[in-house]
Image 1 (cartoon, rainbow, N blue to C red):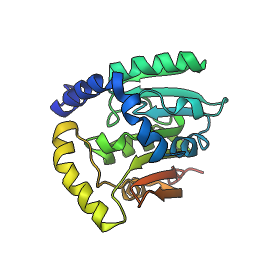
Image 2: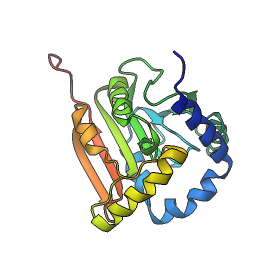
Image 3: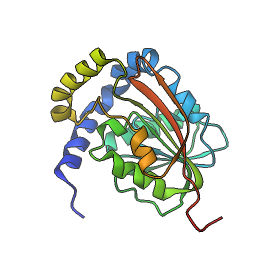
Image 4: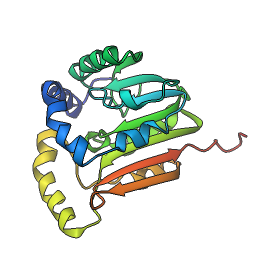
Length: 213
């Protein structure tokens, strides 16, 4: 299947951003997202798929007994993950691919993690549905992202900011993933919102399919 223009554009953007990504994000990682990656990684179990693995920011936080598969659209990002994984001594199976069309069989993973990536996926509902497909029944979907604020003045600013960030980099600031996660058939186990509601962590469980038990 031919790639869409939005996928080609996104890959080009993230390949360009990759060399400076960690430096650009350092302040936000520390002061906005805080311990969000730790919150996610502590809940990961078994076979973990890290979707939108980026430069590998979650790797240092996963428990020692999980196996990690990483997927990203950007080859340049994946090159940085390989370097970080080697420095950490953490084996990682890396794949180039699209969150909306995961190249894995049904029920391949016990945990799917997606940190700071769904905001840039063109169709987040499709990505969440794919995460559900590759999870075993009882598997966990763990999300961290910036979302629409609970405070109207910040919400208004986010809406204005999106007029520039969506055309430039496909980056959304007024999305919220929880309704999409519920609509995909997950059960929400825990959520946490911080920074005037602009940052949200989600822990959701894929229930057993009807008729199985």
